[in-house]
Image (cartoon, rainbow, N blue to C red; front, side, top):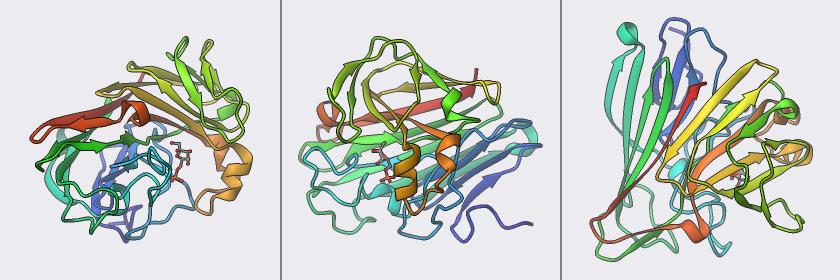
Amino acid sequence: MSQPIFSPLAGVEGCPEGGYYAVVDLGAHVLAWQPPGQRPVLWTSGRSHFEPGLAIRGGVPVVFPWFGTGPLGNLRPAHGVARTTTWRRGEVVDTTTSDGRLTVTYHLDQTMTGPVPHFPHSYEAALTARFSPESLAVALTVTNTGERDLPYECALHTYLAAGDITQVSVEGLDGRPYLDTVPGASPRERVQEGPVTFTAETDRLYAHVGEVTVVDPAWGRRLRVAKQGSATTVVWNPWVDKAAAMADFGDDEWTGMLCIEAANLRDDALLLAPGESHTLSQSISLA
Ligand code: TA6
């Protein structure tokens, strides 16, 4: 048996004929979805860490309980503690050898992350990854198990593989307002005109609840990215300079990836009453 790609981390992999699936316990982090006979759909950096406590660069990082450095810009680590904590693996249903399907569920609660400054709340989080030849579906359900309201941000920070980002376009955001968060962008608040194309560092928070299609002419493929329970779609490509500035990102890797993230953040952050739950989900398929 060859070493799984995520070694030495623990996780689960599925090997349907001609395909590959992988998820690791660190961060309940989906690493790979390669439908049988297709190119990989998720992207992971060749420079990524695969060590306990360190964020993985690629796949589907689970962003919780804050996005970036939080609404006030004062929270660390970036994108919260969920992705650098080892979750408890729950049910695994592996029928890859019969119908090509694999479902893995993970659990996290506040007792597993150690004390988190600025986030003194009790919660239960469940992450379910459903792999099949037709689609990858990832869902994050958070339940407030405390006695006070639970405020949080979340995202499924999905890294998609692309043939050539300079030829890629993203359909489905036309007319949607967005915040351009690239440093120095002016104005920051804009409205999307037509498909999103990439000619420089792109880091945008779209007010958007629907699906998008990623059109990839270099690889001759279209990816449908649908979501539920999300008010924000984040679109990101670091481009040349930011890629070079990240140690866990190859200098020339920016041409082969983009992030399409289902999120709830800033003005659309969530607030759960005691006992209340919310599910954020994203589904990717070949259109
Ligand atoms: O989702 C886009 C973003 O917030 C970018 O601004 C960039 O920082 C990216 O996430 C990666 O963040 P990370 O903490 O994984 O390096």
